[in-house]
Structures are given as structure tokens and as C-alpha cells.
Image (cartoon, rainbow, N blue to C red; front, top):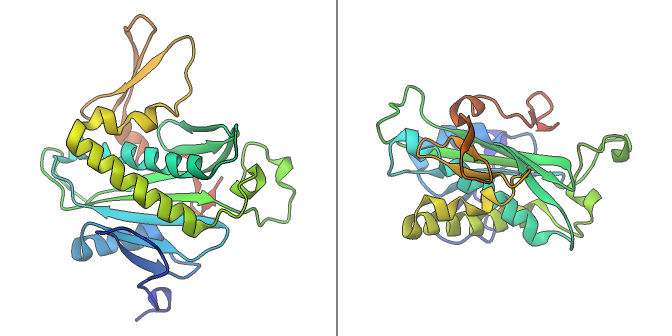
Amino acid sequence: MSPATQGAFAPELALPPPYQAVRLREFGDAFAHATALAPQRGAGTLVYVGRFDVAEFAVVLEPADPLVRARRAFYAGMGALAEAIAGAAPPETAIHIKWPDALYVNWGLVGGGRLAWPDKADEEGVPAWLVFAATVRTAWRKATDPGTTPDVTALDQEGFAEVSAKHIVESFARHFMHALDVWQDSGFAAAATPYLERLARENGQTFAIDDSGDLILRSASGDTIKRHALLPKLAAPSWLDLAAKEPS
């Protein structure tokens, strides 16, 4: 067993079935590890990193839809992430998503989400797995004053009293399970509502997500103004400094 995965099973996380927790040490990579485990461990595997300053985790899914439509699970994951943060937020805290993958608290970046699927998967075929992963900065540990970078922040700087990475992961797991249940029972549009409600709007504009996951921007009159393609944006997270492994 490698050092990164010693003590991998993590009973200290209070997760509902069918989640199975896998813990990595501080320098582990939840996204890469979940992607590697996905073919063997299957749906419900939730990998998280034991860090105090960020909540870093990834969950394996086994979709029933073709890949071109299954990618919409990304929106369910991002909506669940925003709901988890909102549930722990002080009153009057502004929480919004910058399309498609960045999460902001009081207009400062705290993290975001990303999605993986099998290499060379057929767009019209059902993929064996998907991995939704997220990172949220819970505590500011840099020596510099966070006030000097107002566009980047951490939960502890925004008044989230005693909110731990463990709390964020557990809350996300519950919200994500609820979102998937809503999707199954009431359709994708209902499951995407928490995500769409967090997108900033101007001049009465509204948003919708089509069957391929593209974002449709409409005017107040209902006319389509612009289409934003999801797939190219998933190639690399807009919010993540890959070298530092943190939102930046």
C-alpha cells in the first residue's frame, strides 16, 4: 500500500449509503485517484484529501445516459456544491457560480468543480463512469494578507465559523444525492435549478441548459441570445492553479 492511501477507508465521514469514503493524505490528488479507482470501485466511491485548508474530493458516478447527455451531471454536482456552501453561510452571504465551473463567495473565488470520463468514450454511448470533483478553500494559510487579493478568498475569511472540510464534503454528499434523485424523479431541469439560480443575471436575462449541456442565454422576451458550449470548458478548470493545487 502506498503512503498516499494508507488508512484509505475513512469511517469518520458521516456519509449516507451508497457512498464509500476513501481518504488520501494531505498531498494526495482526489480527482486523479477517483479517476483511477472508477473502473474497479464503481458508483458511490468518494475520495477526499485530509487537509484543513481545503475541501478536496471526488465522487464516482455510473450514468445511464449517453455521454453527450450524461455530462450534465456536472451541473448537478456544481449545484450541490453551492448548496453545501450556502447551508453553512452566514446571513446575507453572496454565493454565485461563474459559468461553468467556478464558485464565488462574496465575489471572491473559493473553488470550483471539474468532470472526467473514460478516454476515447463514444459520445453516443453510455460511459462506464464519470467523476465529479471539487475543491473549496476553507482556510487562508498564506503569509500574505488575504485582503490584498479581494478576487480570491477562503470561507474562514467570509465569516464561516468553524466550517471544516469534513463538513463541506458531508453536506455536498447529501445535496448531490438529492439532486440525482430529483433528476430521476422530475427530470434534469428540476435538478439543474440550484445551479441556474446561482448564475448572475442582467437585464432580465434567463438561462437554460440543453440536452448536450450547453448553456442557452435568453433575453427577457425569451429569444436566444447566445449559446455557450460546455465540452470545451471541461478540458481544463478555469479556477484551478494546477501547479499549486488550489483555487487561483
